[in-house]
Length: 154
Ligand code: 4NP
Image 1 (cartoon, helix red, strand yellow):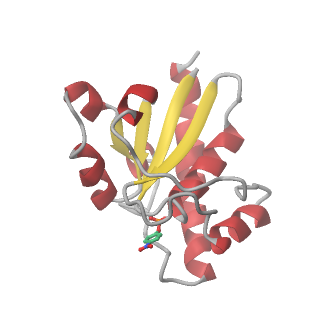
Image 2: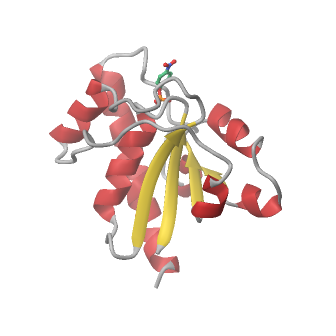
């Protein structure tokens, strides 16, 4: 099983979408996908209703996900850790114990060389159009990522 963790700040807007989108593109017998936030603000919470709605409009149900905080043992439990923006990246790297941990962490948009974005913008203080934009950025990145992951897992 290849294990992938999506990380943002709150684990209610961006990483739940990345989690649901990537999971929908990969066979569940070979890949396990999860998400977490670097902060503890929303532990136990459902994803933001706007992320739930935008995912649902694209045929993906993320309503059963619950917020959790990133923890050091995630470096043991996951093969790949993808961050949404530079702040998430720095916060995860700050918890790394060694170069093996650091090597697992990558900004998700580094996996998509066609992206017009350098990081996934935080839509929390935005409106539905910001959530649509995040969905589109993540869908394209997860499509590229799923192809790369399926190549290495073969
Ligand atoms: P996320 O968005 O990191 O994409 O889940 C946020 C969610 C909550 C907060 C900030 C960003 N907050 O400050 O509570």
